[in-house]
Image (cartoon, rainbow, N blue to C red):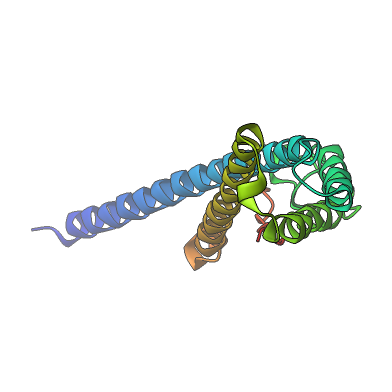
Length: 192
């Protein structure tokens, strides 16, 4: 056998294997970036839903006046922040778009954390036996919304962790597979 042909075949096989690794990692990274964006949108929706249900529960007369005022105020502030980004990384803006740094994420996480603390404060001492059927239904919806926020944030942060781990791979960094996409950031807030 001719050594030139053998070397050519071996080099060709190595190039094909490296190309396959590159394609698989690039697809995985793209899929993870899309999943991070989708999970962030899901988290944003869960937070907006929780704030809406909290506002409804505050108006249901199930709480004392002070608790209702606290919960109504915190939920209205959170509803007012639903259009601000959850993270400063700008991943959901798309390639080439850079938002001006104004610490929106800090504002949003503080507002959502305040709503979580307010919910804990006003709901922990609540006597469920004193609630009528409609109020109990609102309370159950609020508990579901709180659980949805916890799950959505945990899933989002797990996807962010996977994307960050893949992007830290030497092969992905050396070939710049992430392109200009910003590094995804986790959403850090008090979700109870």
